[in-house]
Length: 241
Image 1 (spheres, rainbow, N blue to C red):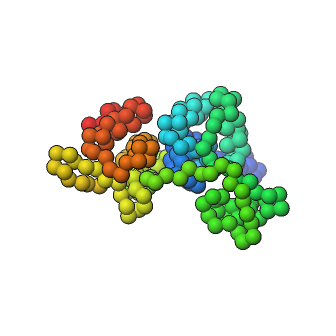
Image 2: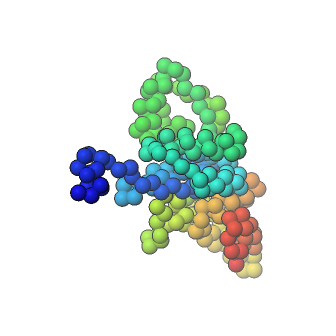
Image 3: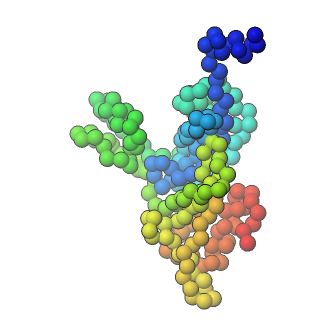
């Protein structure tokens, strides 16, 4: 009898092979740009673990670079998401120190903690979803809220990331809402057109940061090309044409 068969008959359950990866996407709780650790579990799908959130994508991209360095040598024996995150963040802080994050911070009184835990376990998020009746939460640090936000659309036929990076199979749009897109002006013809989607989240985020910081409601085509070129340079990609 082979060793593998003996272990199965003895009730041994092998650990699932996990595929880890880091990426930037919109924060699930605000308009900040969040760094995520994706935990791929093969046929069982994947889990996403929030690392930190940042008002500017340039800062998020800086943190992402360190996260990818950590992943090169990251070893652990965990299967639980929280244990993996704790080990990963510990390694990240050891490398960077206690780096700043723009996550919102909230204070919950001790007698309401259990109710908030139960509420959050149902998928609710502090600062985004309506709180249970009779519970007040103090806002210690407000969340990042922006006028122009990033929305995404799944694209069929793209290669899906095995650890959750949406840039693998999504396109990204800048809008105030799903039905209010951002526009580009073509100076030569004075034509106004909807800004085309970006194939990478960081590119859309870089442009959105610019228009939010400069209170823009429209860009020229030349400005868009310049911003795409800068975003591609940030990511080490071929210069936009």
